[in-house]
Image (tube, rainbow, N blue to C red; front, side):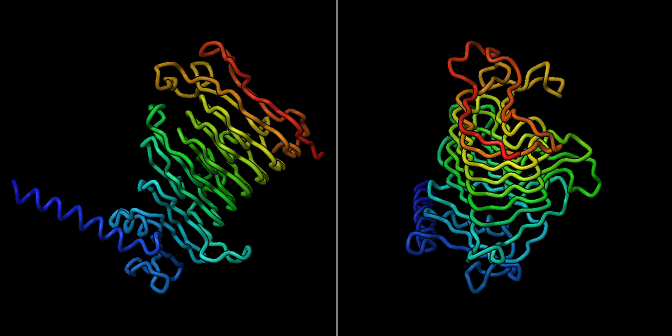
Length: 342
C-alpha cells in the first residue's frame, strides 16, 4: 500500500511537470496545417493536420495554462470534433495569421448530418472556448456549446466567444440527398455569458424539410446572459435568432438582417404538449414542461425583408402563453431603435 501511495504521488508530480513543460511562457501552443500530418509533433514547423489530433494531444498533456490552437490558412475537408477539455483558462482556436479573407482557414464539411465543433462541458464553470477568423461551410451545424439541459444549477458552461467567423451554407439544404434538416449554425444548451460578435451568417438554410427549423443562432435550455451583436445575417430560412426555454436576459443588438427569418428576426418559444413535434413533451429540470424566457433585448438592429421576400414590420415573435409556468414578472422581450431598410 505504501508503494502504491508513493507511486501515486510520483505520477501526480510527473503529470504536473509535463503540463508545466508544455506551457511555454504560460501558453500551450499547438499548430495544424492543410499540409501537416497527424504523425507530427504539432509545433509551428511540424504541424498536425486535424482538430481531432489536437484534441488527443490536449487530452493527453492536460495543460494547466492557456491553450492556443493556431490554424494555418487553406482548406480542411470533412473534419468534425467533440471537445471536452477545459482548465479554467482561455482555449482559443484561431487563424494563424489574419490580415484578410485570403488568410482564413476554411473547414468544409462533407454535407452529411454533422457539426464542425461540439463542446460538451457541464461542470458549472467557465469553459472559456474562443473562436477567431475561421470559415465553416457545408455542415448541418457549425458550433454547439452543450451543457446539461436537465441540470440547470450545476450543469452549465460559459464565457465562450465566437468572433469574426464566417458560417456559410450551413443546414439540411446542403446535404446531397436533400432529405434532412439542420437546426443552427450556432446552437447552445445551458451555456451562458457567451459573446457572439462580428460574424457573418450566409445561406443558413433547410430546403425541402422544415425551412423554419434552421436558425443562425439558437439559444436553448437556460442559455442566459448571452450577447449576439454586430453580426450580419444574410439568407436565413428560419428565424435568425431563436430563443427557447428559460434562456433569459439575452441581448441581440447592432446586427444587420437581410432576407432573414421565416416569421421574424428573433423569436422566443418553448416546447409543450400542443406545439412540440415529439409525442412526449420535453420537461425542464424541475419537472415542469419547458417555460417561456424573459428579459430579452432586441435593439439597434437593421432589418430587411424576410426569407421569402416579404416586407414585414414584425421583428420578433413569441409563441405560447406568458404564464405557462406561472406569473412572469418581466416582459418576454423589449425592443428599441430597430430600423427597417426596405
